Image 1 (spheres, rainbow, N blue to C red):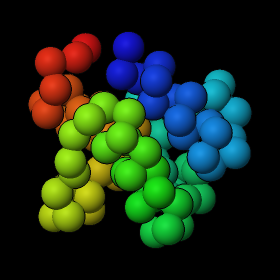
Image 2 (cartoon, rainbow, N blue to C red):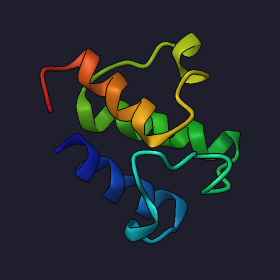
Image 3 (cartoon, helix red, strand yellow):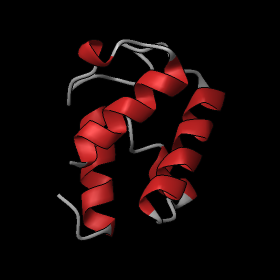
Length: 78
């Protein structure tokens, strides 16, 4: 559920095909996201999942899997 929502958000924000996004996709290496893209994506994640990503946690979110696991840890969603 989180992965599916996240995939749609990433696809829309970074203008990539959903089929190109897997759990192991790296935001920077695979999707060519720059720091502004990542900030905007984090803000969207915070809004969508009603959580706050601490600044020091942002640098730990390098892949889609990192984002999914972070969201799971902060919420009771699967």
